[in-house]
Amino acid sequence: MPKEYADVTDSEISSFKLDSRLNQVPHACETVLATLPASTDNSVRNQVRTALTECLNNAIVHGNLDINADLRTQGRWDDWHALLEQRQADPQFAHRQVDVAFAQSGSTLWIAVQDQGRGYSPKASPEPSLDELIMAESGRGLMIVHHIAHRVEISAEGTRIEFWISLLEDGA
Image (cartoon, helix red, strand yellow):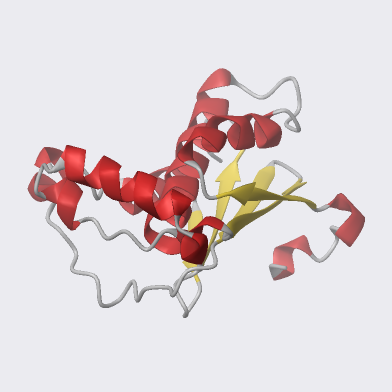
């Protein structure tokens, strides 16, 4: 638990497990959003939904199902979808789940997403230029999370991401 959440007790941390199926991501996001104060602005809710969706998609596809981005970056969407369906049916991958934990402290929402994959090294991944990212058909997820959240931490093993989002409309 992050040190700024020292006042949050274990009973205040919500968590759930998610099967490695992309069709479960919207419901998982709504589970987290339902816990936010009713006064939370829709633009903030959309930011939470976007960042969490990107993290869950990455955890499922790249982590638990061990599908790299090559097929998508090459525009081979039919092959990518076929591999996704194959991995979701393969017992070696199908049993893996994504752990989601979240808590609110003051006006900040903390979310942690952890997969059961082999991990990756964020430092070993090349940093694409802004022009490359804008034109890319995929590969923008972490950049989006870094843009939305005011703090992002990825575990050394590359299987866990934690991020903090201000629940105030101006992001203060």
